[in-house]
Length: 479
Image 1 (cartoon, rainbow, N blue to C red):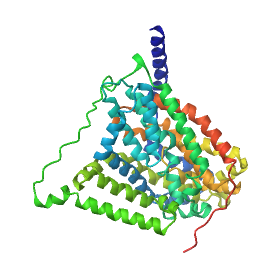
Image 2 (cartoon, helix red, strand yellow; image 1 turned 60 degrees about the horizontal axis):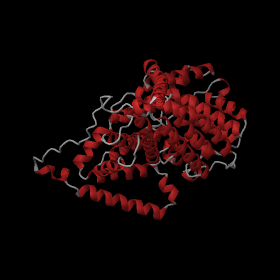
Image 3 (cartoon, rainbow, N blue to C red; image 1 turned 90 degrees about the horizontal axis):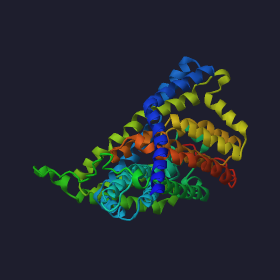
Image 4 (cartoon, rainbow, N blue to C red; image 1 turned 90 degrees about the vertical axis):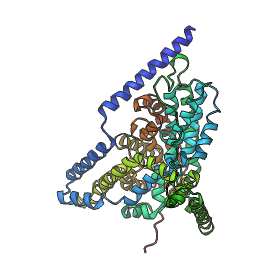
């Protein structure tokens, strides 16, 4: 009895420390949009210090502001399609069945972490919603008393652990699609398909190691006994019953309630996908972001059954995309100032940064420094990958100069990009909306994951990077 009480007090003490950090962050850390907006002016000041004229900086800002319009819409659609698929009736029924698997609070946390990471490899937006609904389904069980906070943090591990190593990686998707890649970056890197980034054995091994580590930490850190805080104790309503569909009142509404059009759209998309695989290499088809989004969007339509239900789900999915829509243009402007506003001697800020990273040399030191730089910048600029456009021009130029494998350099960025999400609560927002919790309820557990992940990630990018050979960039043919 005494040992149980001491364990509970220890867990509560650790949670108190972590939640104190979360409360400090909530109190002092501004909104992510404000951070991005401030970043534009920090970059502008750096350009001025480099000798750029006000005209050069202002021109780069205005001309570059909409450079990422296509990519911005694509990333917003990643979130929207993930939400729509996760809330469809078939997936909801699957979630209810999956919720019956764990048999104790600790295994439930590890189980949720595993499933959220597995789903995140396919779509990080889907992972957030799927994980949140799975946590709610487990919490509704009357035969299992679980800590709602620990399970909520475990549901975030898809994004906090491995999302950027999967198919919806913004940087990998960007590098594989010439139409989404800014011309200046395309000249440096060429196209890098998934076979050179997320599907290398080194990247897959790193993903597997991080998944195993995350599951162990989630299970080990889950509160037990009296330390558990249930959804009921946190005053969370767990009722997920869908709203009743409004009855048809006009003949013109018949198609809105019919499955005919969704089925036809599904068949059309399936035919398109088959022809794509017949005509192109498999990796080219898989790495097409537009095709990926088409499949997920139509899949959501088919799974919801009728256009009316599908549109209701889309309406709920739009708010979580707001941050992406208003922040990515700021990242585009930052990238333009860094790469286009020339200073003394016609040198841009990005060229100076490239010279600095080049001076480090190749090998493990380069990989570790790039990873650390990405982590630090990501804490202050939570972008979900849009930040790649800010870093890529000088990071990839440096990688080319020191003959570092470009595909692995993208993966160094990707694995390091996930780490700041464990501290900065910006990307928790869609999950928090599903769980009906506050960031401070989860950050204590995610911060613990960060402490373990950081040294492991640095070790992996160093060791695995030694197994790569340098491959010169393959530039697309001029039109």
